[in-house]
Image 1 (cartoon, rainbow, N blue to C red):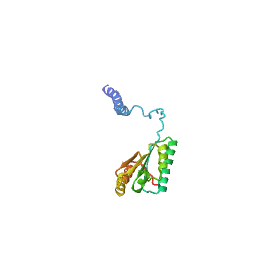
Image 2: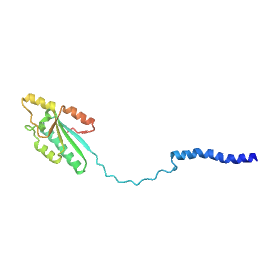
Image 3: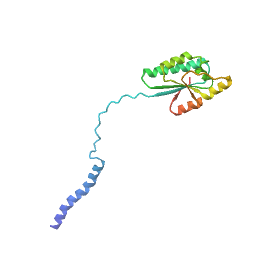
Image 4: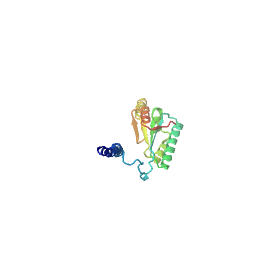
Length: 170
């Protein structure tokens, strides 16, 4: 009778020994091995990409200035038509500073047009170039209203590129 009782005890203990690790695994990893039910996706508003471009000008040639401003105008209208954020910066250095000079700019009308189409467009002049022009001319160099100065135009362009801005040379 003693042997029979032991056999009956072995069956439940043996089953428990096999089931305990399995039950613990289920508890620790989740009771269901089925993939989680999909949550209905909520349609998020489409995020429009932000575009940032810098256009350099380092020539006093009117044709080069017009070509660069044509690019600026076309890009501005293109991204506005797509309702996408577009940040534009024109950086003038060396002889290109003439583009923003009140007394020598051959493209004043195109700059006004660009400001009308893209009021946030930023115009930047290399301060080192401007100071050199003032030393050579012996007088202050007049710039259009709203033109910003940066210490070094080419260095500013490099930093913009390193910051992820697109760079288009026309």
